Length: 405
Image (tube, rainbow, N blue to C red; front, side, top):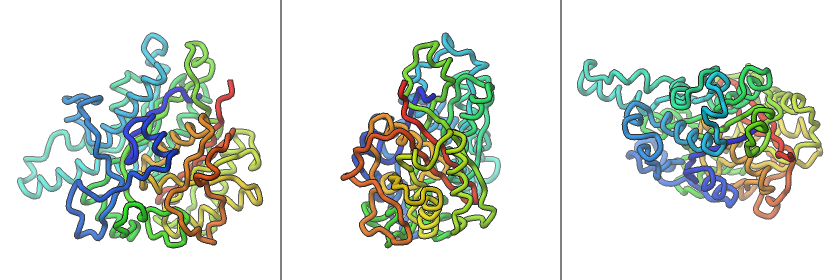
């Protein structure tokens, strides 16, 4: 069961704002202001400009955390407050953390390398390593909420958060924990992050924020780098009901596979992406006809969108499932993408309103899927899938169900 949700994304700081803006199709992509990106050839990103770490994380704690950990803590505070998990109703031994990040503390790494280069190795901060490592979001959450069950991290590039949510679901299903804090966080909108992905020719060079991220459009030309975090509180049904918790939705299935194909390119045949969707449905006891909506990975790269669309057609055939990528609004949050997309998928099922596929003006014939628009987004739905695919061939899919009591 999902009993808590939290999010911070380029188009909304906080669960309510993020959900309202995403369902309304609000774009959070904007010109880069954190640094001068002119030399990279990239001019827009999914920046978060209204984040105050002292407000929730706390001034002292924030100084000992990279930005990605700060995002994780803020969204976990939101989700835990919504879930109303306290030491009075949940034992520390029954509370665990599985939390993902694709890169970890990239801002800290960049800043400390510059400091070492300019001032010498003796000036490197003693907090460099604990702030930079990719498991520290999970560590900070475990400490903050006194979660003494499993505390671990999953690093599978852009599938990190979805793999984390799936493994947290399985951990509860196996009876190993009663409550899990799960999701993902990323903060890579900085000089080295933009330069690195630009060197891969993965980023859109388009300067118009409303045209830069165009999932499934025939003129798409790369993804827009974003940042943020999403956190879910998952809970065993009997534990949630015993304490009278509000249930927001259900995770009912999880599928994960590997392309075993290429370090950055998805398999154009989409075979293993399709199998991940099938496995998630099988665990939930569902057929393709049961699925009403798919939150696509939909990065707006030529290879991803065409391959994912073909994978969807392999699985669903003539079943007219509705599909959208929210990356036209948020950009690509890397290891946090699956987390914010899980949040919006759960909210969409709860509200009966699907997020539109923003940015697609002329749908690519190579992407034969039925996209969500403002004309068909009011669509009461029972089951949905959320797809995430990462560099290295990592495929992860979560199946969600609307809570019906």
